[in-house]
Length: 355
Image 1: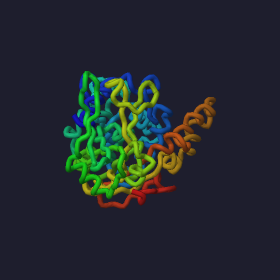
Image 2: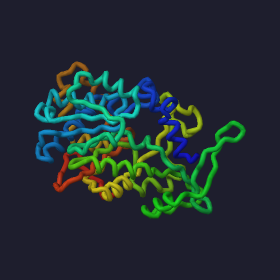
Image 3: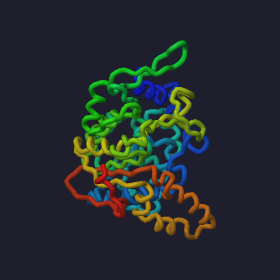
Image 4: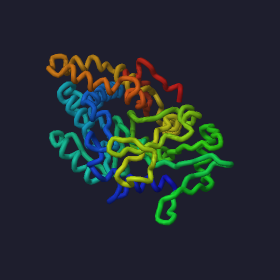
């Protein structure tokens, strides 16, 4: 099988796949995301979602659709903040989670039971109706299975085979669709360069657009522009594996019990989004996004009088400081509709032109 099929099996097999288990996420698992660091992350996204609602003219129904919700912490933090701080917006919300894992769905429902009247679940995009609001992802696209390629005398695709009971790689000439990807983004690789191609994003963003009448797609993930992704310094690609909070580069060990990720090419998200009717209106690092939204104001609002103020600040810094996920994570917003929204999250440093 090609590497894409191998990665999909390792991560999403219904019985043995990595993401079918709830034990792999969080501080006791193999990795944790921004909502695990501090609930203020959800509060900040709540602010941005509320501004989106205003930009759409404060409609009586605003749908938030989260894909890849993990244990449900982000949804809980968003709904909890809005219930206490923005009741007018909270009353208009319907929060839908797209979840393929029955185990994770059960965990999310347990965590969000106090918001039963605000939440619902679907197992796939095809079950969604057309809505207005915001589609939201946090560290979803980096878990999409990718094709692995390497430049030899010609561009070759990596396949996985078995030799004497061991997994081995086999390189075969690339398919037409992979070659078209490199042509579309004007990518020329030198000999020996190894990298990834995420083609599944193409269908995914079309599916999102088909189900979005008017509103936003907010994507938060590891990633780069095309120029950065395929620069010489990344000639070994971006594929990483996480096992018990340790990083390795071997996807052929710990199969089904380690995470496998690849960074996102945000330029492809922009171009394919435009083809589907989604206009890129903002792109910046997560740290810049949170500072632009006024994280200092929310810190004062929620924690200024707390006895744990110092410890709260120490945790919050992990979301914004350079060198960590405040820098490695990027935030991109795309819009579908006839308005010209300007969002506060991108007011300090909007880098959409680098895409």
